[in-house]
Length: 263
Ligand code: DGL
Image 1 (spheres, rainbow, N blue to C red):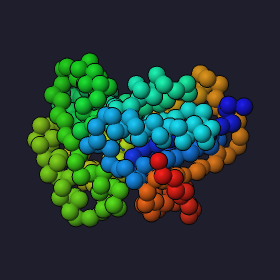
Image 2: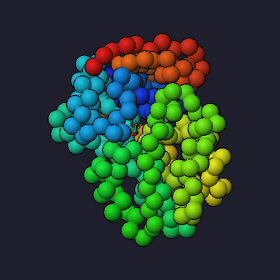
Image 3: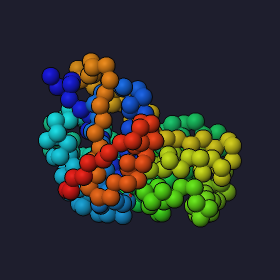
C-alpha cells in the first residue's frame, strides 16, 4: 500500500526541521524520513547546477527508501531544482513557496521585506511571485549571509549573533516594514532574536504551516494518508550530525540517533 510509505523531507542541514516540527503536529500518523545534507551545507551560494545534482542524489536515496512523496524543505533547493525534480520523477514534490503574497496583501505600511539566500532570490519562483504580488508595496530584500551557519553551529544565543542580525534588520526597520517573510527554512529558529529586535507591529511570516497544509491536500488528493496510529521517524545526515541530533532530540523530547549516509 502506497499510503503506508514514509514522507521524505530534505534540506541542506537542520533548517527543514522547522517544517518537520509542523508536519508531525498536523499529520501525527505519518512516517517521516529526514535527510540533512550537512556535508554540502550551505546551498545558498552554490550554482543551480550544483544544487540540482545534490538534490537528485538525495531524492534517489529517499525514493530507494520508498518515500511516497517528498518535501523540498529548503527554499534554495526549491528555487534551483523543483522544476527538474517534477519533470524527472513520478512522485509528488512539495516545495517552499516564497510567502510574498500574504505579506503584500496584508501590509498596511505598504512596505515589506524578504530575508533569504542568494540562490532563492535568483530563482524563477521568487521573481515571478514578487512581480505578481508585490507591485503595490515597497519590497525590501536582504540576503542573510551568515544566518545559516549561525543556526548550523548552534550560535543562536551568542551576543555576536544579535549584533549581526541588528545590523541586517536596521535598514528594513528604517524602511518601515510591517511584514518580514522568512525565505529560508533555517531562519524560523532565529525568531526569538528577530522578535527582540523588530518593532512589535512587524509580523514575521514562517511558511512552514502553509507548506504542511499543501502536503496534506496532496496526500488527500492522491489517497496517500497513512492510517496507522503513530508515525515513526528516521534521520540521515551526510556529514557531522551533532547539531541535527541535538535539535531533533529537543523537538521529539527524547534522545535521538541520526544515521550517516554519504551522497
Ligand atoms: N534551509 C535552506 C533554505 O531554505 C538553507 C540554505 C543554505 O543551505 O544556504 O534556503
